[in-house]
Length: 241
Picture 1 (spheres, rainbow, N blue to C red):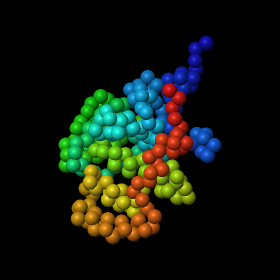
Picture 2: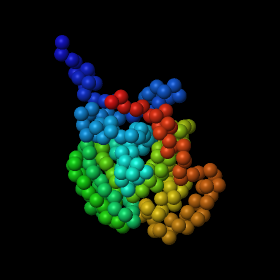
Picture 3: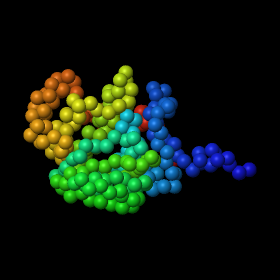
């Protein structure tokens, strides 16, 4: 007997990445659908790190390479952006950053010029050039990025972990960082990432004043708990590959 359309779809799609409840069961939240024969699934299968996510930001990721493995001098992150994924503010780095579209077109904006990278296409953004990225499609887009340093990973994982704990939304719901937390993140990442929405002199003044108040209120840019694999395997549905 031939499989039904629903059965064929299930067989050709790997559903994973949902948040887990306290019993370890997947919740009714955004799900990552993967082509099990696609390149993104192959990269995920070969990753030594867990699948992580931010339901409020509509993104999933896994760390493919890290400097302390001795095989690279840059961390390499595989990331999926949902159709409504949050976009980072325009920013610059003192070093290059390389983007490679893996599945779906990744929208990349460099110095105000926007283009879409097709799967397999790579672009290296030179140091000091303002850039940003996002997903302008109705599907999930996967891309690979060679990041400036592990500091970027630390900030991302900390924000995503807080999202899982309901730190940003109303009544413990998923959400995105508010201005106080974003201010501390920008101060922590300053050596390698500078956002360009405000003049640097204004940002420094805010770090010294409002940032100090935010720290007194208990806000932190990085939380070591979220850098442990055990946190993510307990909080995010891992793929059965």
